[in-house]
Image (cartoon, rainbow, N blue to C red; front, top):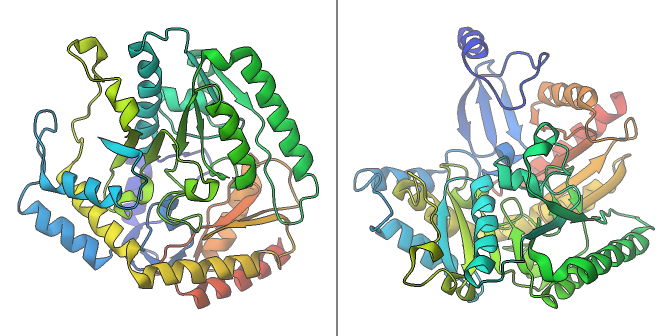
Length: 428
């Protein structure tokens, strides 16, 4: 308890409000469980903010970091390179389309998006297409907390205090859907109509379009159909607009395929990767681009150079962790369990007495009848407390409850979690 009291006085936690209470001290993690200073264990059903693909303290990733730390912990990445970075990119290139062939390192998802936006803007400037200055995104999209990422996520509801500082970004409606949604065709038609009208007026001025493919995470796990996104991309391509997919959440098996764009059957020009990239061990991110975009930055003049870099770019320890995590992901045992977890989500989510049940691969979500807005923090706080009392780490997004378990979780435990959730909801 002493540690918790000191912590509350020293550390400013994310989303800390006046009634947040004391944080729970976590002393150990193993597999799908976290062990608290309060002597309780918690089943981590949200992969600790969506990063722990394989659970906590996975020995293979820990060993990879340990071995790398005794060889090379870090080196400036401007003018130097090293095996862990090359090895990681080579491994990723084997599961990414050949079109995505240039890897730019950073250290978190927000920055990976920031890099992508800067690249898209400068690409057109380097080609002397100076009128291409507009950005386009979906309403409700969330892409991070740096200023560029906040600007393209301005309608997510998280960045209202900074609206006056954003550059101009246009948005089109996002037709979110769920099991039994009878209005989806109408919503998709309206969104495509809005896009067509926008492109007729601004298509030649638009630099890029950015989207979380198939799933808007922070906005409330809102999902759209792959067939709709295919139509969106086709329209954007007809105007030569750069396509950026923010796969920071959706990448590495979360949606049932290795990357969400595989279900859309459209390869973006730029893809942003982070979160699960290192299996939750170390902060590392990548912005992967096509060769054609990379070529626009090559030349004899420094003005065409992409002048962006970070102190911890391509940190060898992070690269080693990511390579090990990728190896685990591709193992048959992991792939089989991903499909098994997806099956449990699909079979159980529709049985709950909730609003808008939905699933996508290993992710499932639903809304509550008691409130209509995702910003109802009161109901979220109450639910979170009830879940923790039952040993479940679930962090509702307002009236949206979601499950995103690590791939090591046994399907039986996920089924049992649904039973606990049903009891809690009946009490609520």
